[in-house]
Amino acid sequence: MADARSLTLTPIGVVRSPFTEKMQAPRQPNTAQAADGSVELFSGHDFEHALEDLSTFRYIWLLFWFDQSEGWRPKVLPPRSEKRRGVFATRSPHRPNPLGMSLVELTGIEGLRLSVSGLDLLDGTPVLDIKPYIPYADSRGDADHGWLEEATDPKVAFAVEFSETARAALALLQGFGIELEGPIRQVLELGPEPHPYRRIRKTEGGACLALKDFRVSFTSAGTSIVVTEIATGYRPKQLATLTDPALEAHRALVKLAKA
Image (cartoon, rainbow, N blue to C red; front, side):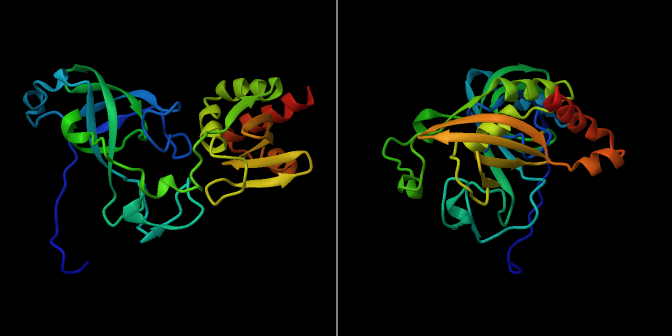
């Protein structure tokens, strides 16, 4: 790309979101895991006038920069695919220019703050532009789903339920500011089989999903998945010797399992 023109982009604001880690954020907006949040525009640029009339639209496009993306790949393996695809045929963040677009519902404007719902972006994501969603221009009745119409695409999402034991673990972790239910659902709704996007291994009683530093045990039958237990991924010796305050949640999980 040495012969390409150099372009300069300047963010106009940032996203304020409950998602602080990639694991937490849904892979598409307006899913069950999407959240309420806001866009905070920078002051001193006359953006107050630029926002006039935007409130007449219900939905808006956020054009943003994948600021946590590291490099790009010509072919990627999407979560809903069993084979690698050309990056331009996917929504992957690993792009030559890490530009993204997200459709959100505009629920209010107060000064330079836009309240939105259906958000799938990480907190602090740089926003490059805002455009209204216009149905007659942005929606095409004859559009298809491309490679997503292949048999490998899960047409029916798996139903994920949690046992009482798993629910107790989720509640305990929430007390430490750790939200795992959404990330667990996002992964397991795609299926119980191992996949590069799903760190799953078979066990004697079912299967186990490795989700960051946690281990999620589950069973499956047909299109139903039941999460039976949520445990720490640390070994007892590590929990006994390491002093990282973040490990308190993991020690509490161990105590809960023994109770």
